[in-house]
Amino acid sequence: MLALFETPAGFALFKVLNEGKLDASEELYKEFETADAARKMVKLKAFDKFENTTDALNAASHLVDSKLPKGLRKFLKKQCQGETLAIADSKLGKAISDKLEINCVNNAAVAELMRGLRSQLSELISGLAGHDMAPMSLGLSHSLSRYKLKFSPDKVDTMIVQAIGLLDDLDKELNTYAMRVREWYGWHFPELAKIVQDNVQYAKSVKLMGSRTNAADLDFSGILQEEVESEMKEAAVISMGTEVSEHDMLNIKSLCDQVIALSEYRGQLFDYLRSRMNAIAPNLTVMVGELVGARLIAHAGSLVNLAKHPASTVQILGAEKALFRALKTKHETPKYGLIYHASLIGQAAPKFKGKISRVLAAKSALSIRMDALGDTTEASIGIESRAKVEARLRQLEGRALGKSISTPGSKGKPNIQVYDKDRKSGTPGLLSAGKVYNTSADVTMDAAPTVEAIPSTDASPEKKKKKKSKDAAEDATAAEPAAEITDATPKKKKSKGAVISTPEATVAVAVAVTPELTKSGKKKRKAEAEAVAETAVEAANGLEKKKKKKKKSKEESA
Image (cartoon, rainbow, N blue to C red; front, side, top):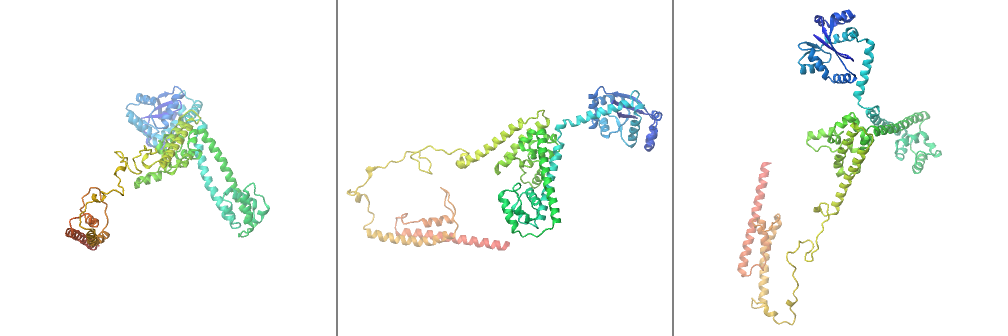
């Protein structure tokens, strides 16, 4: 069995001389108490030395991620064919067995063996003294730490994550303390809570005033406005609050001191967060602001992790619960998350917030990648991207304004028509020219042929009057039942050119019959009127029967 051991100088491969002692792992430490006992247990077979610090750093970074370095692969392929390899890292052993087909062992006995090798390493490897190993280990650890960070101390985004978390906690605590001050002091001066709305101003006023009887003699100009100050002094005179002892007032003032101190520290923390955001993510700060940008970084974990997200994820980052709930219930997915609090989305109209959030997320993703992976510290890309988003917002608002001014079907453009003198308002243009009034066809009072132009059909005008009156009476009697049926039946719209086949259409025909339509005589008119009335009555009876059948079917089904 062979044992692989990593050192700052290179890889050491030891031959286990007595494998039987590995079964008793609890007593294995006794075999490495002295250098002579360790030499009887293991023997150095081969050593692969690092040529420089770069090779050592490369090998160490691969081993930290449980990956197989290229130099170690060649070394094991040359020295470990057909052997069993004892290794400390199980993941690395799996990678070696998969790629090199070498049987690797990792158990409690191997862990004790590695501990013994570490204690007697300087004695087992000739030419490698202990005082040489210490600086090599320190230098390699420093190089590995710088490689893992990959950023200068000014670019560490951990401070932003901690600062925005502390800022949110301060807001919650400050709100809790301020509400406690209002509730506590409200027993003594309840009217002050409605007069002074700001929590910090309320705490400063209570600390300065103490008892409400002192309000008239104090000057609050440094805290409140003149109108609010005069209103507070008037309310203090007629207040309905209870009296408070001096000991209680001291505790209320100490709580006011806590509120004021927390508010001042919150202002300092916000200034610190602003400076860190401008140094670490200047482009993102220009796009969405300091607070929203810091919350995005904190939600993703780091600036690099945020840069790996696509624009669609940046858009809904912070709305994961709503997203998965919408996917589960098959409803509409959310259009924005933490990015909703950006100033650009706040400027947009409600119907444009979704579009602006999509555009802003796309530009913010580019800005984040520039901040995380770029070398410049200027916010040039952020400024250009913000100008494009603002232009898009103005374009959407201008398009909506054009739609409101123009006609509905004009798609933002005014509906301009060419003037035509022969076209009436609301009607399409005439295909032919308009008719001109013919003055030669006018008839004057002196013209004689007017009487001859009218043909006479009956013998006398008196007979005409009698016939017209009788015909009108008969038509009226025939139209009465038809009119009643039309009132009882629902009306339907008729399309042009359709054939009249419904009972309602027959009733309408019955109503529309006039004496002018028939001119063949009295008997013919009576017969036609009676036929129309009979068809109308039959249609009404048919409708009533249908209604009765429907009622019966409903009652039976119920």
